[in-house]
Image 1 (cartoon, rainbow, N blue to C red):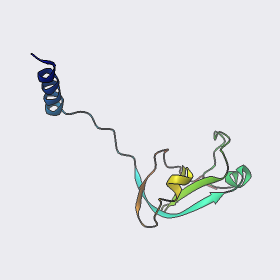
Image 2: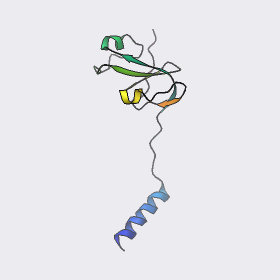
Image 3: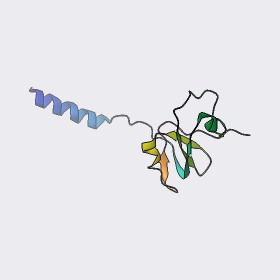
Image 4: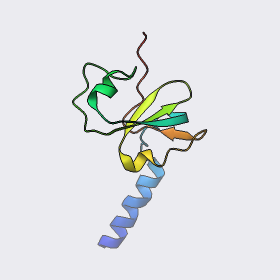
Length: 98
């Protein structure tokens, strides 16, 4: 068999068996966005946790309609559209109870 035939066979076999797909990231509806210019300002939010590593400032956040937040970089922050679904790559942060 030639290399081309083996490659084609391996491709056909992988298609027939199916490959596991990564689980989709949870999506939430965007309510709005926020920017925190200092770590102190971030610490006063309901999404700050003691375990947070000192984040770089400014801190960009996308907030969902149910109060959860997603910390993102500036490039993703500008893509958030109110009333649209957004999948948070870093994971949604639930607000602390006060």
